[in-house]
Image 1 (tube, one colour):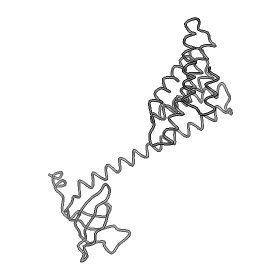
Image 2 (tube, rainbow, N blue to C red):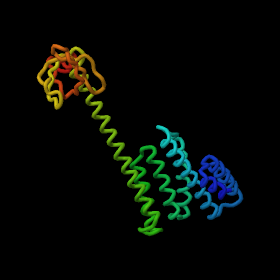
Image 3 (cartoon, rainbow, N blue to C red):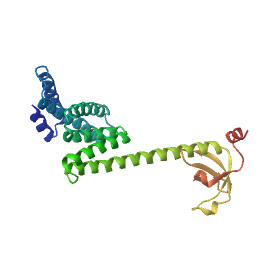
Image 4 (cartoon, rainbow, N blue to C red):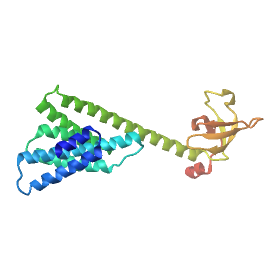
Length: 242
């Protein structure tokens, strides 16, 4: 039954494979009622690891095709891998544990738990070096996965910084500008003919202000906050000063 599950995996029938693996898992757990041998324990941990890998793979496929995925699959993957690791560590099967740790690291990174993912992968790397050699395929996979996780973490940090800057900018605009407030245009790189002209704020969006200039044609420009200087403090600014 376990080999049949792997066969389904090769043909990309993930749900069928998981069903077969679940049946194999139930069968192995049933055998524990009669006897629990080392071979049976290792067999169980192998099934658990492959099932965890399948859940992570399904989640990765979901987010590749749509904007979001079912994070419950990663939760299941973590539980399966942790059970497998408990068995492997108990029986000192550290070489196999390295593979399970790699799957667990992937599940952690899908939850943006990057520190846990790197720590888990570091343990997998140390075990792979010890039992497979520093120039083995297993070690190369760990290095590749570590680089990918670090890249994901850097991108997540970059997004947080951008969100913070946007929040600060939006709140700064609301604090120092409001509809109807008088401003002076300054610091333009383009349309420099409008530098030094006064105007009034007529509307605001998330990151820019629409200013109607004191010109004959009542020219309106969409300007960044750094390109306008308030001539009179807004009610919010007066409240802050007070």
